[in-house]
Length: 106
Image 1: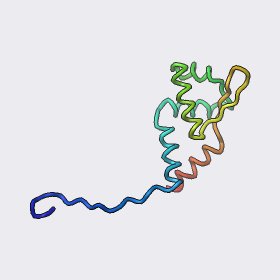
Image 2 (image 1 turned 90 degrees about the horizontal axis):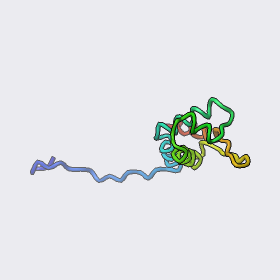
Image 3 (image 1 turned 135 degrees about the vertical axis):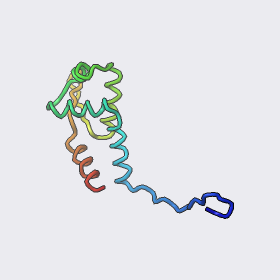
Image 4 (image 1 turned 120 degrees about the horizontal axis):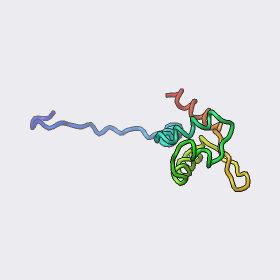
Protein backbone atom coordinates (compact mmCIF):
# COMPACT_ATOMS: atom_id res chain seq x y z
CA UNK A 1 0.00 0.00 0.00
CA UNK A 2 1.10 3.51 -0.61
CA UNK A 3 0.75 6.46 1.76
CA UNK A 4 -2.83 7.10 0.63
CA UNK A 5 -3.85 3.54 1.52
CA UNK A 6 -4.11 2.40 -2.10
CA UNK A 7 -2.93 -1.01 -3.17
CA UNK A 8 0.03 -0.99 -5.52
CA UNK A 9 -0.22 -3.53 -8.29
CA UNK A 10 2.88 -4.83 -10.00
CA UNK A 11 2.84 -4.57 -13.77
CA UNK A 12 5.29 -7.36 -14.44
CA UNK A 13 4.88 -8.92 -17.81
CA UNK A 14 3.33 -12.35 -17.98
CA UNK A 15 5.21 -14.73 -20.26
CA UNK A 16 3.44 -15.61 -23.48
CA UNK A 17 2.13 -19.16 -23.64
CA UNK A 18 4.22 -21.56 -25.70
CA UNK A 19 2.80 -23.87 -28.36
CA UNK A 20 2.37 -26.76 -25.90
CA UNK A 21 0.42 -24.53 -23.49
CA UNK A 22 -1.86 -23.38 -26.28
CA UNK A 23 -2.39 -26.94 -27.52
CA UNK A 24 -3.25 -28.14 -24.02
CA UNK A 25 -5.69 -25.24 -23.63
CA UNK A 26 -7.46 -26.26 -26.86
CA UNK A 27 -7.73 -29.85 -25.66
CA UNK A 28 -8.92 -28.77 -22.22
CA UNK A 29 -11.56 -26.55 -23.80
CA UNK A 30 -12.74 -29.50 -25.90
CA UNK A 31 -13.12 -31.50 -22.68
CA UNK A 32 -14.85 -28.59 -20.97
CA UNK A 33 -18.40 -29.87 -21.38
CA UNK A 34 -19.75 -32.96 -19.60
CA UNK A 35 -21.48 -34.19 -22.76
CA UNK A 36 -18.17 -34.25 -24.63
CA UNK A 37 -16.58 -36.25 -21.82
CA UNK A 38 -19.52 -38.65 -22.08
CA UNK A 39 -18.94 -38.98 -25.83
CA UNK A 40 -15.30 -39.89 -25.20
CA UNK A 41 -16.28 -42.44 -22.54
CA UNK A 42 -18.83 -43.96 -24.91
CA UNK A 43 -16.30 -44.22 -27.74
CA UNK A 44 -13.71 -45.70 -25.35
CA UNK A 45 -16.07 -48.61 -24.66
CA UNK A 46 -16.55 -49.33 -28.37
CA UNK A 47 -14.24 -49.73 -31.34
CA UNK A 48 -16.40 -47.40 -33.39
CA UNK A 49 -19.80 -45.86 -33.12
CA UNK A 50 -22.31 -44.56 -35.63
CA UNK A 51 -23.47 -41.01 -34.94
CA UNK A 52 -27.11 -42.02 -34.43
CA UNK A 53 -26.02 -44.55 -31.77
CA UNK A 54 -24.26 -41.76 -29.88
CA UNK A 55 -27.43 -39.66 -30.04
CA UNK A 56 -29.50 -42.55 -28.67
CA UNK A 57 -27.04 -43.38 -25.88
CA UNK A 58 -26.60 -39.78 -24.73
CA UNK A 59 -30.27 -38.87 -25.10
CA UNK A 60 -29.37 -35.51 -26.61
CA UNK A 61 -30.61 -33.84 -29.77
CA UNK A 62 -28.83 -34.89 -32.95
CA UNK A 63 -27.72 -31.31 -33.60
CA UNK A 64 -26.25 -31.08 -30.09
CA UNK A 65 -24.30 -34.32 -30.47
CA UNK A 66 -23.07 -33.20 -33.90
CA UNK A 67 -21.72 -29.97 -32.42
CA UNK A 68 -19.95 -31.83 -29.61
CA UNK A 69 -18.44 -34.27 -32.12
CA UNK A 70 -17.32 -31.36 -34.31
CA UNK A 71 -15.47 -29.79 -31.36
CA UNK A 72 -13.85 -33.09 -30.38
CA UNK A 73 -12.78 -33.71 -33.98
CA UNK A 74 -11.36 -30.19 -34.32
CA UNK A 75 -9.29 -30.80 -31.18
CA UNK A 76 -8.01 -34.08 -32.63
CA UNK A 77 -9.55 -36.30 -29.97
CA UNK A 78 -12.08 -38.03 -32.23
CA UNK A 79 -11.90 -39.27 -35.82
CA UNK A 80 -14.82 -39.83 -38.15
CA UNK A 81 -14.98 -42.16 -41.15
CA UNK A 82 -17.76 -41.77 -43.69
CA UNK A 83 -19.53 -45.05 -44.45
CA UNK A 84 -22.20 -44.28 -47.02
CA UNK A 85 -24.78 -42.00 -45.40
CA UNK A 86 -23.35 -42.65 -41.93
CA UNK A 87 -20.26 -41.54 -40.07
CA UNK A 88 -18.47 -43.98 -37.78
CA UNK A 89 -16.66 -42.20 -34.94
CA UNK A 90 -13.77 -43.49 -32.85
CA UNK A 91 -11.21 -42.12 -30.43
CA UNK A 92 -8.03 -40.78 -31.96
CA UNK A 93 -5.10 -42.70 -30.50
CA UNK A 94 -2.72 -39.92 -31.50
CA UNK A 95 -4.94 -37.22 -30.00
CA UNK A 96 -5.30 -39.04 -26.70
CA UNK A 97 -1.57 -39.76 -26.56
CA UNK A 98 -0.85 -36.07 -27.14
CA UNK A 99 -3.29 -35.07 -24.38
CA UNK A 100 -1.67 -37.52 -21.98
CA UNK A 101 1.83 -36.23 -22.80
CA UNK A 102 0.82 -32.58 -22.38
CA UNK A 103 -0.83 -33.25 -19.01
CA UNK A 104 2.17 -35.30 -17.86
CA UNK A 105 4.45 -32.36 -18.70
CA UNK A 106 2.61 -29.99 -16.34
